[in-house]
Amino acid sequence: MESLSLEDLRQEYGGEALNEANCETNPFDQFAKWMIEAQNIETKEPTAMTLSTATPDGRPSARVVLLKEVTENGFVFYTNYRSRKGREIAENPHVALTFYWPELERQVRVEGRIAPISQEKSEAYFRKRPRGSRLGAIVSNQSEVLPSRAVLEAKLSELQEKFADTDDIPRPESWGGYSVTPQVIEFWQGRRNRLHDRLVYETGGPSGWTIKRLSP
Image (cartoon, rainbow, N blue to C red; front, side, top):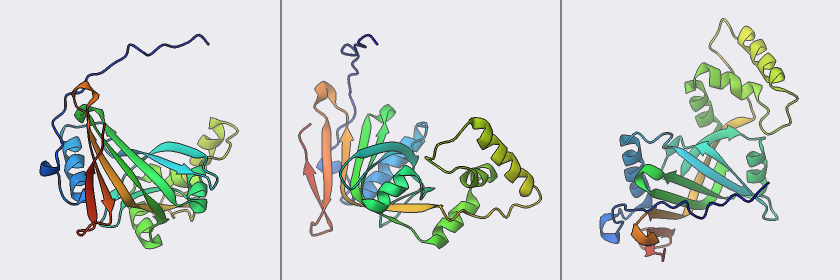
């Protein structure tokens, strides 16, 4: 293909300041504050986050998943344990999350370790999901080669017929939740002249966290 030049595409940022004085001392509180603001301005998919995993020898991969809960222990999402990300997580528990809310000119980066949540919690959430999503979790062997879309649709039709008279749809053993326990959380606020504000929280301070300002 011919070269695709993107050099002239430029967006000037002008967001409000992010200062040590106006941020929360606990990064989970700061994250909740920003998440609520992202929801309030009706950002499309405010819970979307890029999950980055890597193989044991350091080959990375990334994809977007949806955040479902933030607890005092970490960030929770659900997926197929046998997917590519699930296999990489099983081999290497070090992961990263990235949130980006362009309307607010904000980004949050999370680095930490990941582990499965309890089967009971995964079961409880699965039963809250829409019927179609529950059937989809059974139908899809995520990340495996699929001969055609028609094969997927046929499997779904079979399940729809099988469970036509009941809402008791079993959770696949291959499906459940993970929690990412952060060691580093960085908050990025776009500012003019590319002199962005970057505050990073790291574990280990007297209150559990230290806050440092990073050069943009």
